Image (cartoon, rainbow, N blue to C red):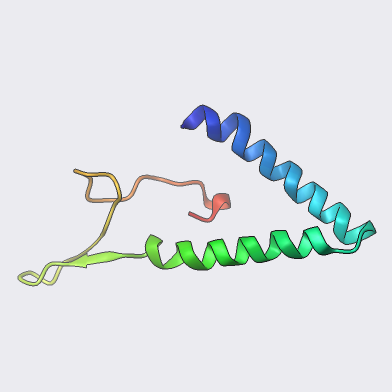
Length: 83
């Protein structure tokens, strides 16, 4: 998954943003609005899931829920990806 992220996902995202910015400056802004809306919808769907916590009823301790089985804390993420 890491090679996919580094060599395909990030470069294609950069190209998409560059093309959308060019559309904003010279085009009819249709692609720019589509990219903006998809990003806003994706962010709104991902945000509630990234902040889930588990409250232990006995001790009232709060800890984040991680998607990886066996881990109690989330893995480190890159801040510019918004995760």
